[in-house]
Length: 524
Image (cartoon, rainbow, N blue to C red; front, side, top):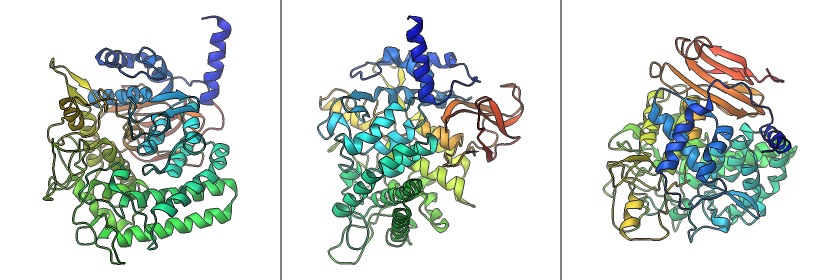
């Protein structure tokens, strides 16, 4: 490579990160073998913008590095960045992010699907290269995207990204489009009682027991969007718009808590659309009843619902939370009929929502019914579910559609292979959930904020790991390092929990505890 071109690439990279690379604690080459093995195990059927041959070059300069004693969890973290990279697609309308690698008939322009797009933003906000989500944000509203083909918490997702990479100009420029999107949902999916309704299939949750109607999903999404619109309007100096959407969020909060809460079952449920004004809740608890906590919606008294997550008759299972409570007579894990069923199988999409919601509960509730250990155990179960046994007996990292919560078998894949369905390996490397964000904002506890304060509050239980490090994390134009070293011997930086911004230490605690610190105005 000629020197001028190399210099140009360095300048472009530094421009995208906002700062030069601060001194790293972790050596990126330590993680290269993961990617080498992922590539070796892979049948690369549908390469897009960054093929496998370029995967390590991209990941080593774009994703936060994570090291911990649990190599299964560490491997899954890098595997999920490796698969996310596969879905970055360059189009005449800029970059988009796909859900399926092969084209599917139910997708929109450029094979995009709005159902997992909120997850794409929550996960992708930690990439150092801003182009991908910059383009994707505009695509949904101005380049032919269909944000209402499926449920999609669009404004909330863009706000969540802004909390990591502030971009007031882009966000406020999209405010009219985001308002128009909210109003279009109101016209097509809102009844006079104030509640939004959705078909379960359009929630991405086919064959559910609770069925269609006033679902905690769509109403929580719209609550999250209303709050985000109020915050974006504040940035734009539009106080009347901000007041309007704060009032809308308050109205939705009241409706969800009063109309979708089953006091006897102690859970948020679906209410089918009635012929009259009388609402009758479905007789089943479903995992999506935890969605309100994803958006910080419920008051403290509703936290009792979380006991169901760890109840073996509720949602707890060996390979991931079930999508319906196992005590219900219609609970099923079927290998007949539709390959995508939400009446029992574990789905990464819903597991990711549940873990984000649980992290919010544990960070905000003064006396939560679950513990950090419950979060850690559920996250680790999720990590271990990312596996597939090949015909030759080898076990390789894998992410697909839905899985058998009792055996770990990827149900859709099994059925589609039996049926010789096309396209080949439809669900392979399925981009329908988060994982890396759950490690960064949940387990390590980097809690994104709108102000220039770093907040770190790990959900790692005491005495589980003696050390971990999350390194080279892009945040508000700086690069953060968060490390835990119980004895001080592992990293040689001293004992305890430590936070660095551009290599400058800004916060320390001798124990795993909440830390806050102002971001430095300049570099180290």
